[in-house]
Image: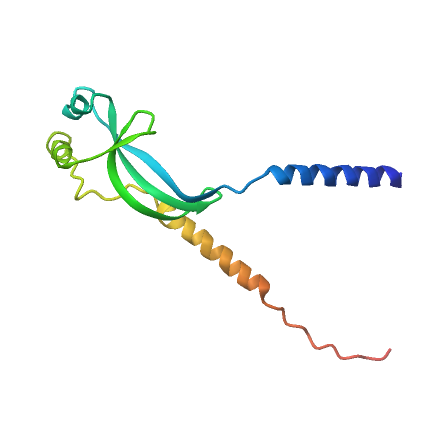
Length: 149
């Protein structure tokens, strides 16, 4: 009976170490994210100028780990293709067309990032740091007085 337990423990330890060696923590320093904001109509002047179907999108660099965004930089509006893999910068002429024909003013528009993307990762990071500090603090030891029985 004890041999079966020992063999099972050895096999499980070897299996866990082999699996954990392949696992990697997803880090993002920085990752470029493109979020589609508005699908432009196919008969738009912008579609004709660019020569392909494009969407109004927001691009930003995201820093984070384990799918938790901690910081975002360089946010701006761009035109992206349908797959959101390539993008075009918006020049003054395209910005004017967007403002006049599609009622979208790039200069006055706010960033469309969600609460989680803006602040959520910072909250998680602060909680992890506070837990690490609290865990490293030594606990109070009660004074024990010896008694005779």
